[in-house]
Length: 457
Ligand code: FHN
Image 1 (cartoon, helix red, strand yellow):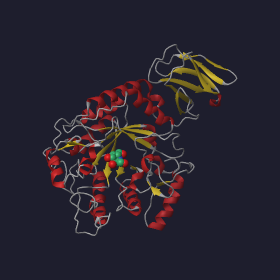
Image 2 (cartoon, helix red, strand yellow):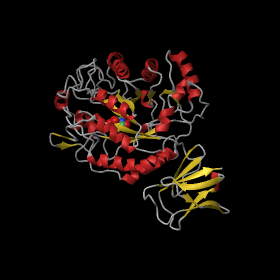
Image 3 (cartoon, rainbow, N blue to C red):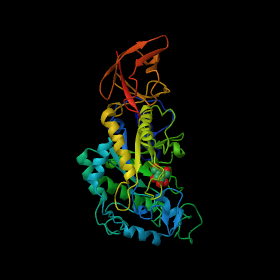
Image 4 (cartoon, rainbow, N blue to C red):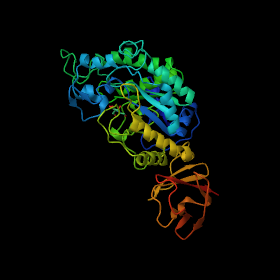
């Protein structure tokens, strides 16, 4: 994040106090100068702006329905929500055989959509691992009939397409006996009645950390570790700070989200007051109204209402909403991590593919206003959003003015020329007492978002 110098200083302080280092994120801090290597690791991520989130595991088999009961919650939570005992859920894991999975197709689709990175669930809360883990047999190689390392295939395909590789990893684990909480099926009830599994620290030390190390060392080019499930009471802030430091020692270039620690404030995803580890904030299913100046952040969002595949969730967001969400997020200085939930066979659902292709079509003409762009210098106009890069300000027009006159706040400063990004056709400019006015064509060349480039003098 941008206020990293301060973070490094605070991190060093923490190192002394806690015996561990941490790059942390604190709300409302002012950006500091960017001068160290630790900051540089964020550069590519800030330029990228758009990535794919993938939630995939055995929960794609029930696809939201178990023994005739449909869950009204998100698909990947079915084990917990419908109280499926471990042995019964394992039957799904034993059947998980995604014969149609094609890493090259996924990577090509990401590229076509204009996405620059992927974050895939290596293990979600159900505990099933999508790679050949040496630390457990509850994985795709040893437990399922598939016998192919999904992460390895994706790592290769993404490298070929220039897509950066990121791994989601759940701290909470409903399958591991030392991690389960008291409310979960199969919890050893003879233990003390507590919300915290008394053996959690062993799981942390002997399972969670070794798995993270395995993920970071087994695959080529891992750029992001994206934690989740950090809210469980047994996971402590000291563990989060130690985990952050552990990762930095293995590879200081790896970017870690703020859910490695305990600071996340609900769905807004930013850190509460205090000193917490993590390189960026993670608003979930929402876009902060005014962004978060001086802080790196990424909104993660579903295309329908579930992360993991649910056969009966058809509540898809439109192309317009998704494209405008991407622009809105970039105009506030954030990244967009857009989710797909592949089927049990390994296919990205057709409605997701259609939407990604539509986003790709828009990006093919307009990505200059997205990649490497930063937050708008001006407040949100009624007609759309601004982004900026170098001496250019990009006006994204969502609502085409009926009189063909785009009014821009004069606070924008001196503008020498204006043109449409998609075809470079130039636009007339004039200034009156209140506004800079740009004369637009009668009808919007792009009904979702037409980009007008405004070049500063
Ligand atoms: O419980 C998870 C949920 O299943 C999903 O993975 C999302 C993605 O950010 N995170 C959690 C809730 O915060």
